[in-house]
Image (tube, rainbow, N blue to C red; front, side):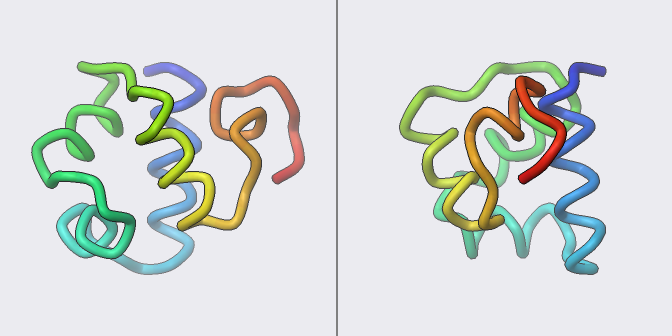
Length: 69
C-alpha cells in the first residue's frame, strides 16, 4: 500500500465514513475512490485537488511529501 492509499484510508476512517460516502462527498466516482484507497490506481491531478480540499489537507500531505496536513 502506498503512502497516498494509507493516508486516504486514515483520513476517511477519522471521519467514520464509508468509501461510498467519502466518494460522494468529495466528488470522486466510487469505483475510482475505492481503487485509490486500495492502491490499484493513482489519482489524476484534479482528483488529488478534490481529495485534498475535501479532507482539508495539502496535496503534499496526501502523497507523503510532508507529515502534517
